[in-house]
Amino acid sequence: MIAIPLNTSEHKYEVRSSNYLFTYYMATLSISTLILLILQEDMEQRGAYSPFRLLSCFTASIAIAFFFEAFPRKNTRVQQLARKEENLNDWQLANLFSRLSFHYFQHIVSIGATRPITGNDIANMTPDWVKTDVNYEHVAMYWEQDKTRCAAKGKQPSFLWTVMSAYKSQIAIIMTIRLLGYSLQYMSPILFGQLLKFIGDYSKAVKDGEEPPSMKVGFAITGAMLFSNIACQFALSNGLQIMTELGCQARAATVALIYRKALKLSPQARQSSSLGEITNHMAVDAEKWVDASTFFPMLITTP
Image 1 (tube, rainbow, N blue to C red):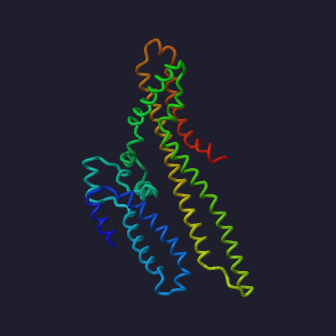
Image 2 (cartoon, one colour):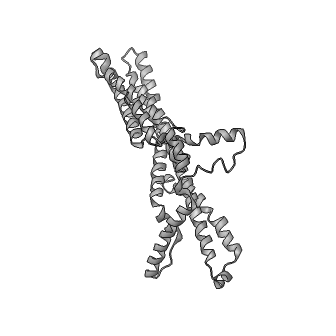
Image 3 (cartoon, helix red, strand yellow):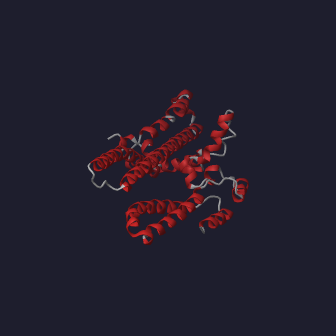
């Protein structure tokens, strides 16, 4: 219960809830719930002295703490000051649960249901790493390193390899999340088959007058199906968001590199590249990064 005043105190000094506390509460709640299912039969045998009752109280308290830690807060005094003084956007103020569930984007959906969305409505929604200047400097640094390294070896630098090297950490996260999401997607049919088998065994045992299997097995399978489906949707939706952000980052960096290179072209170089070619690179070729980021994880998921 002390988590409630602690969370209240936390929001007096922090703009968002702690990711570590949220992860701890979620993991503890999941594990304690699983243990409760295992101890259910022990409670029936030992009665009031079973640890089931104590663990039930502990799980309930963790659930309350998890609710207050995951509850999206948008108008605390610290957040209002952060918006004015530090110009923090809605994504930076959102806690981990709000980011995973896209709750911080809900007010944009509500506005879109009543009137057309304008540029001012979404002006403060973009995380810093998606902005053009940040990605330009990041990719330009890798591009200069690749040009220097390839020049020493007498080779031509590859811009594809440069972009993949610049965003290798995000690519690894995308691959991991997509692989996890599709693995969980295959869990539902398997668990559903186990549930049908349990129902069949239970019905057969009752019909034959034998002792049926414990109901906690059926509840455990049902809970596992619910958890796997929720986790699958969280993984796939957040993986899609990261892929879209990666495509936008690569596109923004490519357009900025082409634009700044076009400003530095000499008169002789301008004769070899027409304005239409440069515009085509910026408008068409750079847009292919968005498509590539969507289909790139299929290298792992398709096989």
